Amino acid sequence: MEQNNNTVPTWYKDENEQRLAEQIIGLEKSALDKFFKGDMSGYRDLWSKQSFTYFDAVVTQRVEEFASMESFLDRLEGNLHAEECRFVSPRVQFGQDMAILTYQLFAHTNFNDIEYNCIEVFQKEASGKWHVVHSTWSFIRPMDKDFSRMKVRV
Image 1 (tube, rainbow, N blue to C red):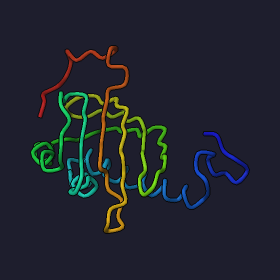
Image 2 (cartoon, helix red, strand yellow):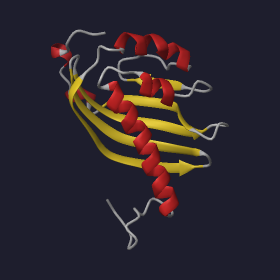
Image 3 (cartoon, rainbow, N blue to C red):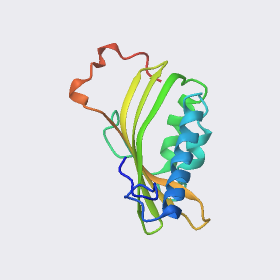
């Protein structure tokens, strides 16, 4: 990670922006920690109820609102578990009351092995809280994936 003399990564304009980035990364990590223990409440709380879209590597069309994700989360509730999870190279980029978190996620779950490039677009909503308004999970190098070993799907 490239840093200046103040140990603030050069892509953050100051320590306040770095602290906000750490807060946003913490929100995502908290949701993931719950997710991989079968608890979907982290993403139920993090994903915006006001404005939300979602792309996933196994979904052919964009999901247009949070309500459409409820059945997905319901199916996973209590069923998804990971022995190991690695949250790699997080970076937050800022705009006006918006932030884009990108990272790579590696996990061995009871359903399949996950290797994703993740993009979470956060927006500061009227409540003053940060919520994800768009989420994209795409396979890392999908042309290298062997899906013949995929375990039972939810």
